[in-house]
Structure formats: structure tokens, C-alpha cells
Length: 429
Ligand code: C2O
Ligand code: CU
Ligand code: CU
Image (cartoon, rainbow, N blue to C red; front, side, top):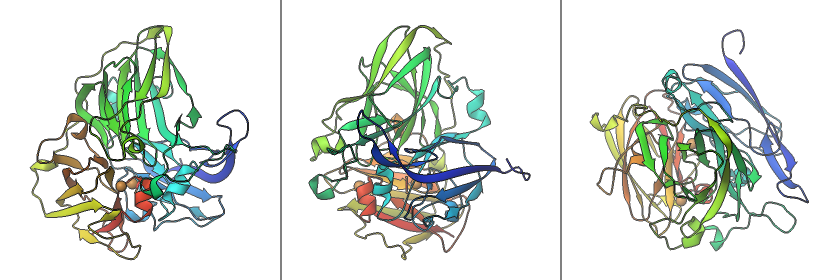
């Protein structure tokens, strides 16, 4: 923290080598290390500033996914950092406690830069979440899990060849959690809160445990649900986060897995639908501390449905285009009015999976094909899975940060699609 009360973070993006398996090291990129980056934590109301140094020999960027902030601080394709340069974004945290993340966002190169290892979590804290009795001892019973897949070539380097002519992006056959293959976690408490991030390019995860135990979903992308939702399965598409609370018994071992999905897809196995694989083993100690009660009341449900709608828009996603158009850096697709609520109807018009992410806001899913959404879509979201053929109505409120010249992005978060142009730009006026 400097004299003015601003908290300053120093991030150094650099190339390196990481040993994922026995034998040869893999050439990787990292933030303050060789693969992935530190978890950043800041409080609601706190003024923060970064010095992001690009130690690579090409331009990159860091985007704060899920953050409400001025467009010039967003770290998207218009805020690239030249090789050797330092970027200094600053803003005041103005949103509820949530598990957000950061990653590069260079147009056409996002997939490549993320695949090499650039990404990290960004946790926002606030008084409300701290007043709840949720597990919150970082690394002990509050555990970040960046779940990714990678393919390795015969030389132990990351394989970037894309199956199916690049229509989905790389699907790896090795699952990494926080950069570790074959991970396990030593459980020492009755309850553990997992902050799950799907940090993959294209893979859909359908999380569940090997014994089908139930767990509680307590938060989605933008923060706490109104109340915990008990389930035994949870989908996360690329870019989505979830916080779940799981109860353990002394001495037991259980695997966190990904299960096949119920709704099929023509690309089956490649988008995760027919896959079943282990992600992480949980090994409980012979005696566990703490109790096993999850608070019954958590946050405040999204309330945008009740507000007047200033504008409706529709977005059809098909063939790596949105409404038939491909991303153009110098084209702003539309402007929204500060302080208003809009309803965006988003449709996946393809036979395979997309998702939809909007910068700057957390939105409310009003309906899916005209019906009230399932519980995991009833909290604040910034990224939503678009099942083939379905129609999603989203309510978004653009609170402040007007800037007629600097746009925010909306796009499919399957990175091969985004890089291919399945992205658009809007400004807040
Ligand atoms: Cu996760 Cu436009 O980003
Ligand atoms: Cu984003
Ligand atoms: Cu897509």
C-alpha cells in the first residue's frame, strides 16, 4: 500500500520452463513464476493499482475477467502491453465478493498465450462474505482450483495442433489443477470450499465426486447465491467459476471427477460430453476440525428482472460469428446507456457448444428457452454456457464508467472461436 492508500501489485509476465512430468521440462509462460500466476486478493472499496511488466518478446495483455471497471483498465485487445513495457491500470473495487480471474486477451492470440500458462485467480472480498461462516482459510479449507487440460508432444512440449480443423480448439488428454498433473489435496477440516475455475480453452467440465456425494454450490461467477444449492453435478464451461462447499469424513479418499453430460452434442467426446476422467483426489486426515454446517442464507439474489428495460438486443452465435459478423478492432457494434438495464437474447444456432461472456458487468439469466433458469444460473454471471439450439435471455445493467471511445468486449469464451472473431465490442455512453 502506498502513501495515498492505494494497494500496489507488481506482476511480471515472463517465459520459463516447467517440469510437469518426469523427464524434460516444458517451455511455458507465467506471471511472477513459470506457469500461471499468483492469486490476487482485494477488498470491495479498495483502491488498487498494478505494474504489469511484459517480459516476453511479443505483446500480450492481462484482462480482469468478471471485474467492473473502466474500459481503459480492462486489459482487453485495446490494452496490449508491448514487449518490455509496463502497464499501470488502476481502479477502485466496486462489486461484491467473488472469484474472478485474469488472463491475456490479445485479439487472435488469446488461446496461444493462455495455453502457454498465463492465467490466475483474482478474489474479491467484502464484509458480507466474511460475516458468513464459510470456510475461508486460504489453501487449508478455501482452495483455489484452476482446472485446465493440456496435450503434450513427444518432446514434452505443449501440443497446440487442433483437432477438427480448429473448430473447437485444443482438447488435451492431461488434466492439470493449478498446473499439477495427478493432483491430490490433504483435507484437514470437515468442510472444504473449492473455488473452481474452468481455465480450459474448449473443454466443458461436468463436475461430480466419485461416490456421487452431494455438495453445496454457494457462489457463481459474480459472487454468492441467495442460498446454497445442493447437488451432485455441476457444469462449468470455459471461463466460468463456481464456489462449492464439500463435507468430508475422517480418513476417506474421494475423487473429484468430470462426468459425461446429459445433453448430447455432435462433437461428442471433444466438447467433453462423453468424457469421464478424474481431476483431483481428496485425502482426508484421521481427524478433521470444524463443523459441517453450511450457512442457509448467503447473498442477495439478482434483482434486474424487476427493473424497466431500456433496450433489447439479440445475438445469434453460429459458425464463429455473432449475428453474422466477425470481430473488427475498429468497429464498435453498439453503445449502451449508462445506468440502464438491457435485455440481451443470446442463441446458440450451431450443433455444438458455445458460451457467452460480457466484460464489465455481472448479468442475470432471466430465462432459458422461456423458462426460469436452473439454480446454478440464478446467481450473478459473467459467462454462460449456451447449449445447442437454446435461447438465453440475460438482463444487464451498465452502472457507470462511460467512455465513448473505449469499448468492452462480448464473446464466446471457447478461445479458438474468440480468436477467430466470435466477438464484438460495445461502449457505455
Ligand atoms: Cu475471460 Cu474477454 O475474457
Ligand atoms: Cu472477460
Ligand atoms: Cu464458441
